[in-house]
Length: 183
Image (cartoon, rainbow, N blue to C red):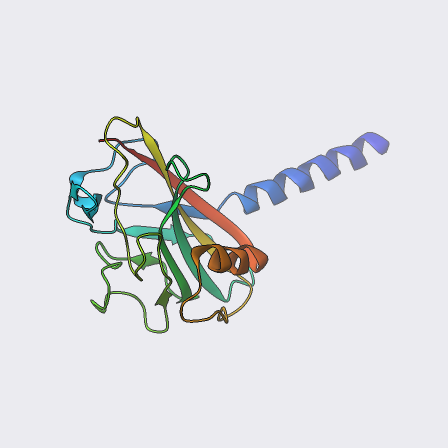
């Protein structure tokens, strides 16, 4: 009897882990653990790329998701705290993808109601890759966050740190792709 209960408990726990692991993030433009292209490189600060945000798709959001937020962070930037390349908040819950170059400021490719927060380059939009030459491989983490609120109420000029705090405080789960770049 106890063995059956123990086995039932293990099966139940395994099923919950499997369900939790269904939230995924994919891209046609970037791949997990692979180098990104010049298309995603910043244009400025000595970089001459296309500054185009990659296409992103997600599925399997946790139950109760009311909106999404997207973050892109380079943990290897020589700042002591990394570098925030892109943050999009208030993505509607029925959205499951962003088109290539959706992060260009004011191009209208983001879903209605979405908002971009200020990146570490100082403007709202996608700020591409631009690691210092010879600094080695940098790891760029693209993360989609499922949120329990329809809208994050943050100031227009919120820092990336404040946006991240609000995103993490309202997260039901997340899915990531870590891609690489080097100059």
